[in-house]
Length: 163
Image (cartoon, rainbow, N blue to C red):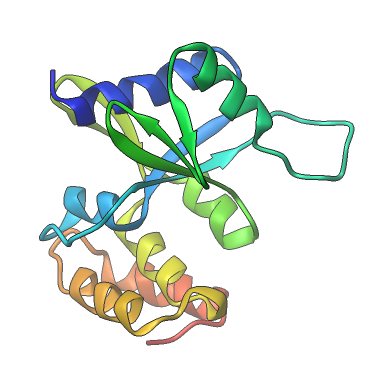
């Protein structure tokens, strides 16, 4: 099993252990499942955290669980099988929808939840994320045969987004 597949298996273990309620691979690594690969430094993972009595969002449970298994933190990443992984709590209705509708795919025999291409595009076009590189990735991804163009139009309209 490759290091990437092993890192994906760790995500499934985290979900099974209740460290996260749900996860989905997002960002440039998710594009690999839907279109041509693009260069990236890390694996972005969109997550729903377990309910908390605090209104403060903290990733400490994730970091502690991974540290107990020998994975070390490096700034905002945790190095899992030599792969920098960044955990991103769902931050709005679009991210919640991306998590809820993520596809379960297979990578070298490992089931992995991946944000669908239409939601990846929409996440790249959000005001706070809209950089030239992300607009370029959204445009590249929009050309993929895996993108349901009607679903994409509806999604962008519902969330007030555009290219």
